Length: 109
Length: 117
Image 1: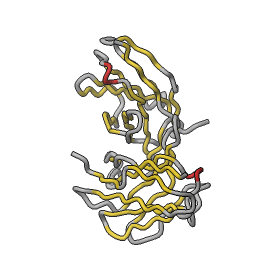
Image 2 (image 1 turned 120 degrees about the vertical axis):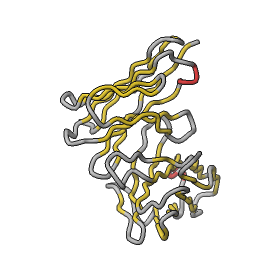
Image 3 (image 1 turned 120 degrees about the horizontal axis):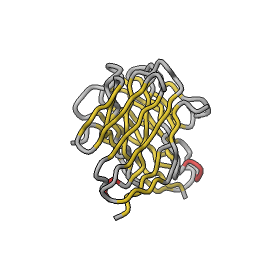
């Protein structure tokens, strides 16, 4: 079992709709969870971090964490074509950051 | 603005050449930096953890004699790909931060695209 798992997609969402990205992790002791966005040919950019169970909202982005289910998700409201990218879920262990394989998201105008 | 600077952004060179990539933390001191490699359509794979003033810690399967890491100051780590071959062509990305506390995120440099002919 991979340490951090994501559906690789591609996930296609119409412009203006809600995009939902999911991630599961295997290390129950993980404490910190991050979502990075990576445009093609570019390095990852941090967009959200979450540490406690529940929801965390930042603009159009909402991160959700459920430690009991070992599940973290990212919702993007009012999706824009500029949101088209690969979204990487990252989970922090003792020191290392472990990445999922990423979900490729395409927002269709 | 950027908190981690990486240079160069693009390198094309002949097989057998050694290539050095620099990673600098701009606004903070980084006792630990990380080097990743990413092949097309794949996720980031951690190659090694660079520790200021001591030896780097390499991930399983990464040749330490091939990928030399030097972290001589609190703001600079370098990765040297020695005697590079076409199979070393990849996107190399460094990151810093994320070690002071569990909640501190890592920030990434812009990456170096290495193409070995």
